[in-house]
Image 1: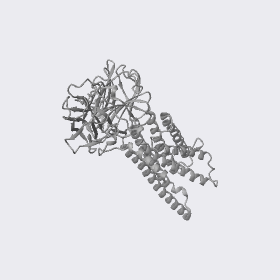
Image 2 (image 1 turned 135 degrees about the vertical axis):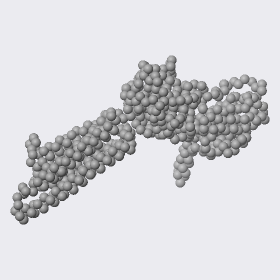
Image 3 (image 1 turned 30 degrees about the vertical axis):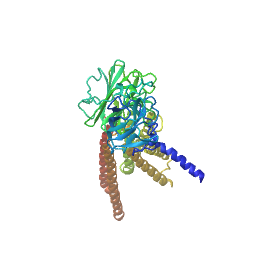
Length: 594
């Protein structure tokens, strides 16, 4: 029992540090002023400021303290001895607005700190600090501000306030202003434009050659060399964020990344580093200067300047190099980004960022993946379907005609099935070549695809060892061959529906699904028509056979009825092939995006 309590107590201590206090009761954080969120604080300086109504005070004076900046959810304000900012809080506070702020007792000193009352959005906090009789010569106020669970700043300093004739401060005060080199502004007053692309600046656009000044759906990225730095402009439609990255290859991972994240009607510009396909690691903004942003008409715009080389920072690539450019967008919640909405655009070639200005093209779906989809579609929605129909319904149409020593229907069937297997094997290999291994981000599609591949290989192996017609085991083969083929076709269709949702293929949802459903219904309709026709033809032939038995009439006289039935089948086959080709050309144009 005692060991059980020890485990429970240990678990409690493990849980408490990661607890968020939306009610502002944060006395446990009085000394460190750090939220127990389990994340690292954002680097100072911050986009928030503590301002005072005076620079001088005497014991017993009252000083008005204002905390302001972009919207935030939580805060903690304390006054400290400027000579020792790690000391306990000093003085007491009085509230101006008790609905958004409350008093706390830190280090057993009543009302020595102020915090939030709830996690509602705030833009400004005003409080009064009461100077104690034993106040030190110099006082500096500190504040922790929580914007989101993962984004917070610790010990944001105020300007120094000193008593009259106080001796000089021996410890340098913390900087108070939000450094100009990382200052956020929203002074972008109009959309970016594409003038100068390819002449004075390098541009990446999607769709190709769109102009963000005229097209609000244009994703736009430009690089302009300015002395020993590069000016970056990024814009695009987005509900959450837009981002770009420098990469040495066309696969995500080990990439120098920059994100413009929309949050509470402002844009946070963050450099980050992407390791594998994990959540990007946000990093210091010290490498960026002249940051600016704009939100208008559903478009996120941001710009910044970055030095070409940043010594000692391996995550900020030298812009003298050549890189593939990734361009992505997606949703964000409270500043936390989610996986991109669709496949990022990846440039066709590497860009030398500080080299000659270029217009660089790219695609959201790699060509090798497009061919994967095209090959599978041709194989399982065209060649295999026509081959099955020929084998199922055209044996009576071409019963004795020989082609290369075999019946025509069999040769057509075998040729189409060989093409199906070749296309399937080729398509199966392509994603592995692209990813360099197994993909863990494609859902069930690769697993179902492997089943299709196995069944496709099994069919010709079974056919090679098939018993001769008329032998006892022939019926077993016929049922096994039909069953395996049917399961393979159904599984292939399921794999294609699953594959249409894979981001790498980047199909226009939901039209791709509608087109695929239409093609499947077309196959089913033609199969039903031919089955019904075959039923009535078989029934009519049986009636003719019965009449022949009774009247001893030669079977030759019933040939015209059979000829009419065969003509109908040939017409249906022609219509079926034409319909397939129409769907095929339309769908391939969608996949390859001609």
